[in-house]
Length: 325
Image 1 (cartoon, rainbow, N blue to C red):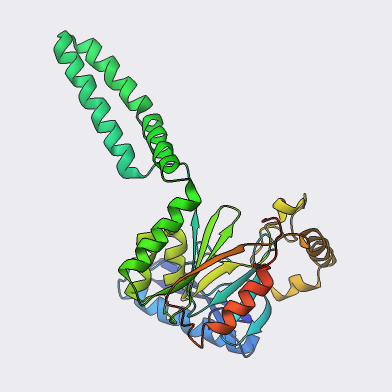
Image 2 (image 1 turned 135 degrees about the vertical axis):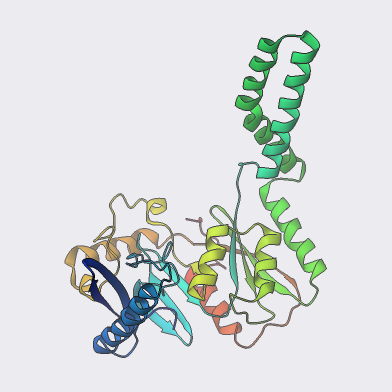
């Protein structure tokens, strides 16, 4: 279960020798609110027992929809279910595809230099500054040069990074080359690649994967997938891909209601929310979330993956020549 239908919360307090311990835990279920409450009650009792035994557990779980939820399932509005995959509406109103076994990975383009390059630039500049101070036999000159090195080191690293990207043919060419090199090292793999507004998306087609599979981590590391996304895949036992445009990219000037609240079934009845969704669908009608680029590697598509590819491409409008948003 990656996106439960029902949620509840339980609270338990323990008093002993003038001290009080209060623990709160969420529970969830696809069956009923009562089943979710029973699950919450069981989880809070277990947590209290472990805390009283000396285990350093958190007292209260954070109410988070997706990013930041420490091991809790995704808590978003369920829009549709397709087999094991679930389409949800995220906190800012876009639809997302959540799959327990079909590997998605977004690779964002960035002008920020890698940490190793920044460290290297700082090391070279600081060493030069120290050498200058020794050569001039002036502590002050060395100190000023060192401060300047620390100030301008990041700028130098950024300039070098941009030059590298430019020599590689740009962000997209560089990323596609990295994907091709990964496939060359892993010839059993097959992937579909897509252009997104901020980078590229990869969808593995040759096999189904558990997010905890070491091969998934190796793939993410090799391709520079966002570390937070990789962590959330492991914690929430699913992969995730946005299917519809980000609202602000299609001219939506106002936010979905309620703006920051974690999903609750009562939100579905809010007129403001329903009106926002209607306006968003109208605004997004001429845009795509990603565009198919090419298939790379093993052409065999795993039978569990095939329907997810079809669903993803249709809802993203990946094969239509539309502006990306």
